[in-house]
Length: 388
Ligand code: MYA
Ligand code: JJ1
Image (cartoon, rainbow, N blue to C red; front, top):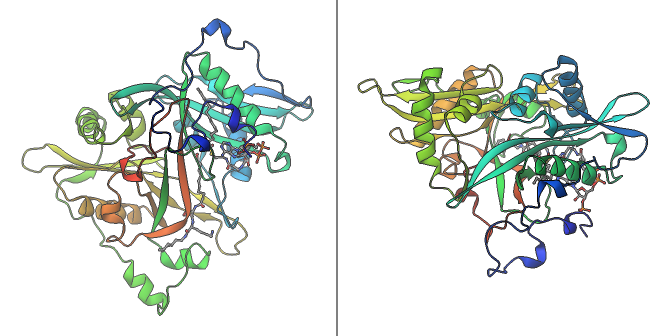
């Protein structure tokens, strides 16, 4: 059934329940001299290109490919529209490799027709920190689908990751592949219910009017927690301590150092927002919340072309109740004109989703690791990792 994935070092469906298999790498690393030195073959009309995202033109080509061909919901009403600034941020964390930003062009026109990317990350699985690649933005142009190009892209990024002596990877997908380490549910909190209903993102509930719905989702004008403010550069050490301590309770989570926190969590306009609570008395940093900006194109609506969505990222509540902290996150997201606030049921998110009027979406997100066996499927609340 999975002609490609059956050949790869990933958990296979037939092994589910085989609790005796050891946790850890499925295949041992090979000497670097044994890693294939040449790129995999593409159909003869296509060629490999390495995408330098610092180049305005290249970044624009990747942006346009994804804008027109990336992930849609199951009814093809919305398509992710990652901004250029977001893509540059997502692909340039500390220690990134330009060689892992891989495109395919049509030889004749030089048009970019496919893409896949990786970035390096240290991911902790129970008590082991594993160097991995996070694979994202796999995309094949709509006109080139179902020609088995995706396996070639995946093999090529695998080869280039191996050349850097890295042998594991983490990735997410909306489709079921062999085999998820966990499956997460998307939840949505309406901030602009009228627009969400007008574009078909949500529906008027039974026995609900528009004005009752607007009232239901109303939020205060300003955050409630004293000392709630935007994160700044000088907060990086304190946020790193808070976050490392918090993430230590999850079975799979990133091993963030200060450089990672500066890159991934320091606010970047229209890309990532982070807030914290600084105790007005002690000036201690006690709580933290963050979300990233990922708009979706609205396909075929007369009145609107973009849905502005915030996605919950990493949140830590050590003094403020998590419910109150996330309510403040909703308030600042509303102030910033987001239409919807999305979250997965990872970490402790279940504790606030229903009370803060999130509703379950029709999408799920499956998490995977490549070449690393995890003994049992995790609960989504045991996962401390959010990929973009
Ligand atoms: S997830 C986002 C993926 N992108 C989209 O959904 C955008 C819209 N769709 C497309 O662009 C195409 O439909 C894609 C497939 C490119 C997805 N992950 O070429 P094909 C398998 C992995 O004929 P197409 C993200 O970015 C499928 O099961 N495999 O199909 C993370 C089949 O294999 P098998 C997938 O539809 C990506 C084969 O591809 C996915 O033209 C992580 C068919 O190929 C998917 N999302 O193209 C990648 N969808 O027969 C893995 C389909 O075996 C990274 N397939 O079932 C692994 C780690 C690598 C690094 C390792 C380092 C050590
Ligand atoms: O956004 C999603 N679903 C929305 C829109 C559904 C439109 C019709 N299909 C949804 N809306 C309901 C909201 C409602 C608000 C009031 C309270 C009740 C709920 O459910 C879904 C997630 O739910 N998104 C997708 O399907 C996009 C793809 C998700 C897989 C992503 C794979 C990414 C790979 C990255 O590497």
